[in-house]
Length: 242
Ligand SMILES: [Zn+2]
Image 1 (spheres, protein in one colour):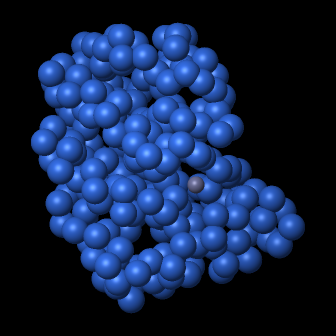
Image 2 (cartoon, rainbow, N blue to C red):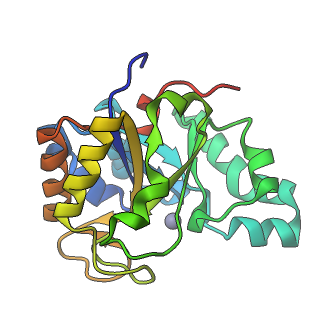
Image 3 (cartoon, rainbow, N blue to C red):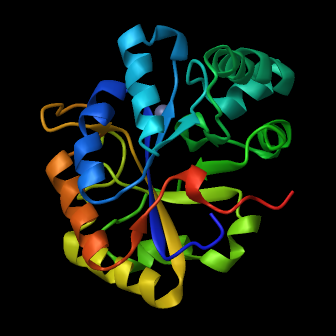
């Protein structure tokens, strides 16, 4: 994409392909593209592989979230970075190759990484979704460092994100209020910027773990569309400068 407009990058992690796929009609209703970082690829059923391929065919981004979701830094400290690569990254690449998937974006499990993991993975993957400190999501101050300029995108390979889930086992509550979303989207549009967010499951019935409520997510998508802030996937961004 040569021209990119003010945007949000909504990303979703782990292994919730069925619920992600079920949400596709809502994404399409608002012309929204997002990124799904998938792990445990070998446990996908044929039907789930088809669903992931349908998401990609619809222009959604699928990214890599490791093979078994180990803690990257600890695993590297204990076993060396080559072992981390062999056990956690290479099986994914082999699987993509076998299935003809073109995957160029990565999200470290637990948003956990260091210089060694980056040095090993930066050649193979373009962009890396990262986390941000656990913080109060109801005040603008917590978001200041996440407003990034569109012009700098070719040099932005690490994309820090704010936690998006409405139910969270280990992150701050409450969720980002809609009036704060409005302020964030206004600033993004006015200043030519982008911001990244990360959630997990998309479900109205799952009350455990890390879950974004689909009705809440639809409100966010609706607001972004009204305010002319695009919702784009990692594959839609300008190429990184290497
Ligand atoms: Zn994860």
